[in-house]
Image (tube, rainbow, N blue to C red; front, side):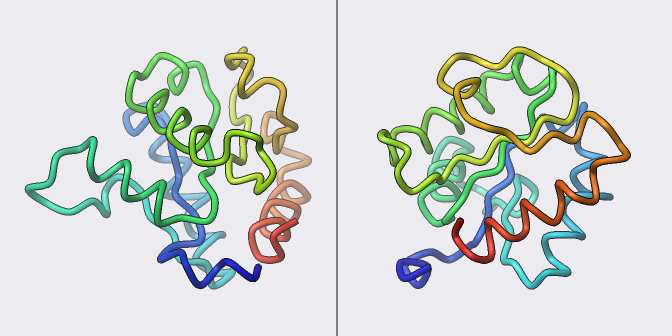
Length: 141
């Protein structure tokens, strides 16, 4: 976590607002914030600033970007842009800045499918997945 001081946020969450917003706001966001993490989502973006600029700033200023993988996420141009941005900033994947979270079964693009993801598709295992996700973000591994 030596480079954490250079980031304003611990996590940016990339999700499909219309389809998956309720789960992000009711389940994921409270867990991350209760663990003391600084989180940014689309509803925190600055007014009057182009969406593209807000997304770029959120990715650049966050140690990690969590992508909430669902069929709706895959169909959105904006979420695709968000994942490409973080991938470009850590092209070799050494900093592991892109953290996929599979909420609903779907087939992500190869650049994401090759990454191990937190599996939230089985509700009985979600507590363990939350724990592992928090450990990774808090400890950088």
